[in-house]
Length: 607
Ligand code: AMP
Image (cartoon, rainbow, N blue to C red; front, side, top):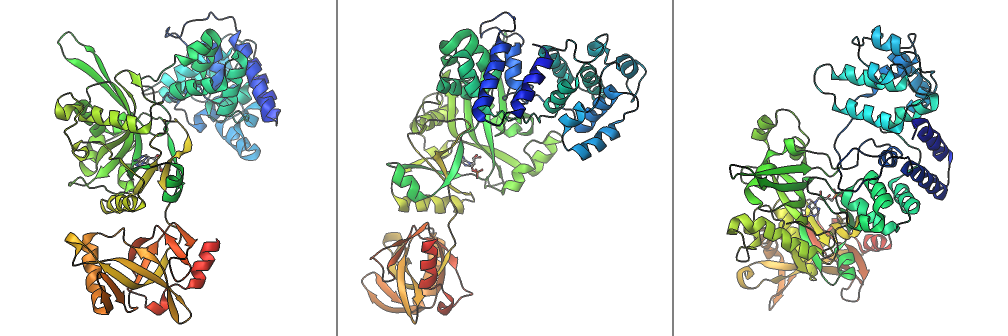
């Protein structure tokens, strides 16, 4: 397919406001690209991508597949220089930039010049500082204005451009790009400029391409979606849909080494979670950076040593292996089968306690001086999901089964090969703990422990849910931070039991109503033993009456409490109850007279 045809279709799509029509145009474009006369091939052949694959990516502004971290690595100013050189001897990169400031969009700028005929000048006379002889490969002899530039030639040149490294590579990149512009018509230049700067913006989202593939090759949308989830490659999915149909799509699997989009979480409350699921899977929420670990065991070499390969990807599927040697070392020491694991990398102090997120950022994506920075900030991975293990994809398995598999994968090296049944979960290095419960109090105490251990809070997950790459669904919820806190007067308490018999706990909370205090709930969770001892000391002098374990307190101390909701309730004298109240701290700066009022409670409930 000629690049001019692609540009023309891109123009039509860009001018189309209706989504359905856009899908129809993309469908036709893919169908035409798919009939480009190239031989068809089976998915097993690792040969270069076909025009259909390229068009399926170009239309989204991608040169390489979504999973591929390869970038063109060419900055805007190099692009301006290439445009300027193709535009003629009187034009400089500054002029292109000025025009961009006026027009606002690089495609319009590129389309505003006349290209062609500069190959002799640009490439060989060194206009704009080009090395002699460079850049001629693409441009030479073609004579400008879109005569025969093809989609494939554009790709091949951009691939060569991406691969240029080392000294002089920026000049080489400019040369290659210049060679392309020099063969472009205005409209081709418009879309080339946008493609190179990843700013295609013709209104084609991932969903449009998914639907267009389904329609062009007559395969069900949901199966295209699944194939896209496992491969992250619109081009490959389009080609397989065309060549192998539904059967081919369904046979597509995850590949160790090729990143998958991460499943994402929504904000949500304990109430939502327990209303929707019989019980919740509760995990700590680690304050770090998302990582996806891919680990393969290579074939045994002649010396009997087996080579392994580990790659680590960020949430955006960027390859961050080089920045995180601890993760690679962890994998090499721990893993005994090929896996894809999902987790978080956290910065830790010498005692292994988590450090704030800013510390991880000093390490994540770092390309230089990794060994040196590693001495200052140590990171460690914690994994909470297993997408693939021992040759089997697990995306369709329920969370709890995936977590069990994760456990056995991480326990292997500790226990010499079996599933590690005798080992406690918290002794398995790198394993995120998972509790299953329908008890809100237990969830509160997991949350309190998470915070106490220096983590961000908790995640609530549907134990039966499958892994949906790239989805921000309601199956994973990060516990919503509490709504505005309330300052309540402590008007009662209970003596604890057993180990806590000498501590006051289960504190009764009240708000002001005129000259009276009305109860709104009891708070028992979110308080460590150490804190209980402190609170007992603070409250004991204010005991007004005692009966059994119950204690009445004179109004003296104010607690700040969080909660999820205020409900109408006959249980307390205010007529309201705090749902899931949580102790946040003592407001030693406040007297009971400064505590919140029933009126504020009513106002908050109405919000
Ligand atoms: P947020 O970044 O606030 O949208 O929260 C979701 C992020 O929390 C995920 O993308 C992970 O990077 C991170 N996270 C930390 N702990 C967990 C966990 N146990 N399960 C899932 N995600 C987690």
